[in-house]
Length: 74
Image 1 (tube, rainbow, N blue to C red):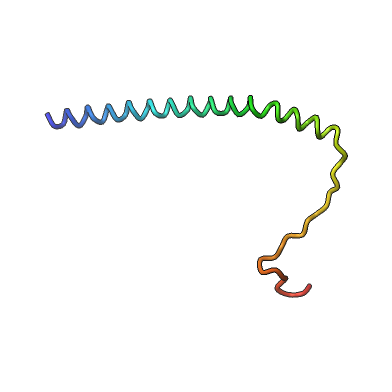
Image 2 (cartoon, rainbow, N blue to C red):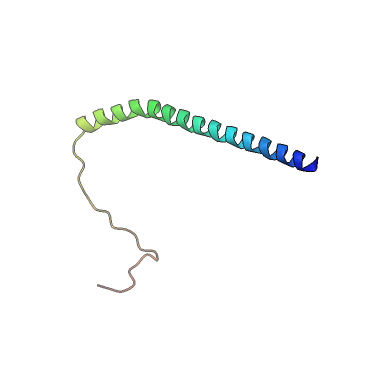
């Protein structure tokens, strides 16, 4: 009798876990679809702005040092 209860509980847990995994997969697919739909107009807008704007100068920024100065002169 005790072994039967343990096996039934294990099967129930396995079914619930499988269902949760299926729902998670479906939720992730829906989220990706929503993100694509939301980002598409933004990407189109950015593409239009990039086509009409002046080219951006390629300047390199110097990175700050951890303690505000170099350890040794070069």
